[in-house]
Amino acid sequence: MNLRKIGDHDIERMVSILLRIGVMVAGAVVLAGGIFYLLHHGGEVANHRTFHGQPAIDRIATKIFAGALALRARSIIQFGVLLLIATPILRVALALAGFALERDRTYTIVTLIVLCVLLGSLIAGVIQA
View 1 (cartoon, helix red, strand yellow):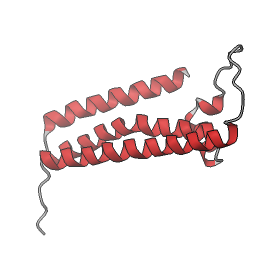
View 2 (tube, rainbow, N blue to C red; view 1 turned 90 degrees about the vertical axis):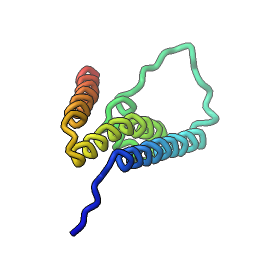
View 3 (cartoon, helix red, strand yellow; view 1 turned 45 degrees about the horizontal axis):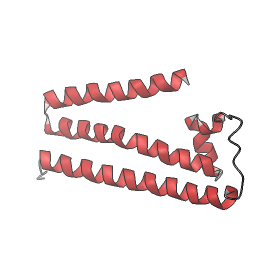
View 4 (cartoon, helix red, strand yellow; view 1 turned 120 degrees about the vertical axis):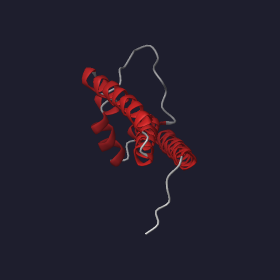
């Protein structure tokens, strides 16, 4: 069996496709949520005299997922934002896999460190919230 070796160009192409698709999907989800929100709440008058913090359903990832599945407009928008945040993290993970397949130790180690920093920051932010 003849397996084609993965090169730098292949990794760059996969990463660019991932980034394009990730941003387009996130944008489409936010747009759909925004349209859905305007259809249901477009006629409401905003009250800017009193500050209302964001409820937990709009701040906690598991509740955002549940709200999006329940077709809650704000949760759909927040889910799109989460997809947008996840896109560069997936890009680093894909680059890590590509470098590992190339057997490039230096870039694999550096990319693994970057991925750990990204995930650590994300987890630390979730713990503090």
